[in-house]
Image 1: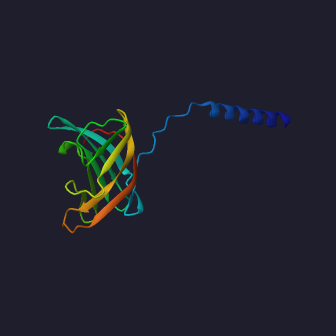
Image 2 (image 1 turned 45 degrees about the vertical axis):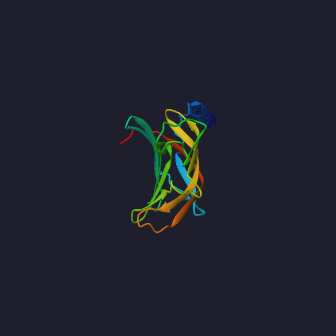
Image 3 (image 1 turned 135 degrees about the vertical axis):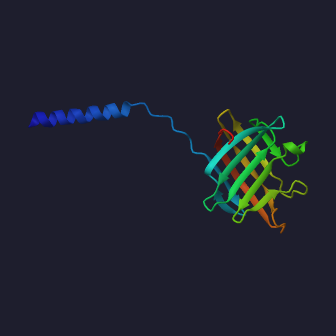
Amino acid sequence: MKTAKFFTLIASIASIICLSSCKKENKTPNVFITADVNGVPTSFSTSAAAFTAMVNGETNTAFYGKSADGTEFHIIIGNALTSGTTYTADQAHAYQQPQMILVVTGNIDYTNDLSFPTNPVTISVTTNSATAVSGTFNGELIENTHHTGEKKSLTNGKFYLLYKPYP
């Protein structure tokens, strides 16, 4: 009886040692896009990803994510991104100005007003590699479907996204 208990104890210890010494797999970090929309914390992390594509010989970078209520969020920058760079609505060339788009229920679009920004869209890229991009953003968007003038203020925006092949 003592021998059976001893072997059970030894087998248990060996199993614990074996399992704890197994190499841990590298886990893919969680991607996210978050911001306060008119002061309400919102996550656009469903299907969140970054993409690049060539348009008229220029590299364009896009971010996409969706909230739980189906609101879609897009950022488009007419540049290949550089770590440590801030992109604003006052870039020298219009194609380099970042475009931020919020599409709410009913396909109502909110976009940044490049002509008269009171709180201009600003996107700061903290890190950018061949596989991932991270940074912050903020800005004021104006309703652009029915031209009601309604505004959405995005503050405290943060993102960490993995690049995916452009569809």
